[in-house]
Length: 117
Image (cartoon, rainbow, N blue to C red):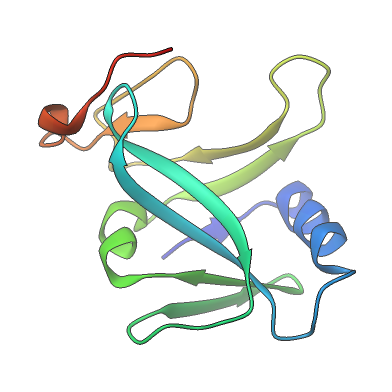
């Protein structure tokens, strides 16, 4: 469903070091962004009903049901760079994405797009 590169897994492990053992990286999509849908990530120690739990390379990820539809087959990567570094998502379901890399359109999300700021 959702995969994580070794570089991204290492960075997530660093983030989770100071958290409780039940804490996971929640990966989600929500309406908005300049292409219609936007990616989000947060640390979360509460699983919700319908969440999918993915354990890979020593990290725990949770994805809600709605987001799972948009993230099927996607890959999370991490790049350590002075400009443009950080987490990124390569999503085969995106037909268009914004230059910022945080927003995408799956082909039916243009109505929720907002202008870049």
